[in-house]
Image (cartoon, rainbow, N blue to C red; front, top):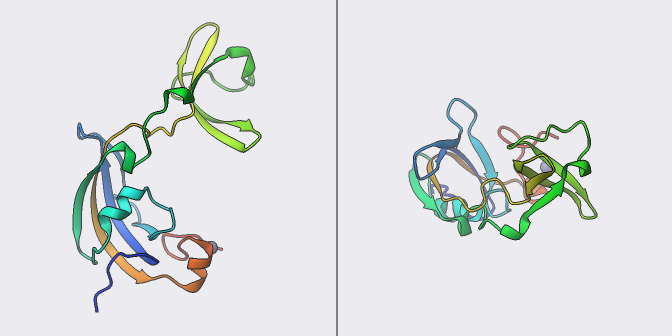
Length: 162
Ligand code: ZN
């Protein structure tokens, strides 16, 4: 019986992700395949949904709207902060990413605007609000080991080594 991508399987894929205008934002081309444990929140939800039932050698192309990818862009997660609140060793430039220390742990943010007094920071994921296209080829599908299922991630090639 041919193994296909389904809950609790380990899948290895080569992929290219593009924005609707064709710009490539990520690709496994020239790198190792991406391995993930299916159904354990390692991937954005739409990616797994579109790949369900695919066998080795199968190629799929699909488009994910933000609700199935990294979520909508939340304007309330954009804040204007006085320059003085940043540590002096951090370059205050558009595009710089860092983590704010909060009571709930580090929270990643991106600087999206800078003027003489203030810095605008965006706590949204950098891919929030974006529609993403994927071209995916399945290179391996196998059953997960009990240890992988317990940890919630892939071990060995393409996964965690510990
Ligand atoms: Zn592990």
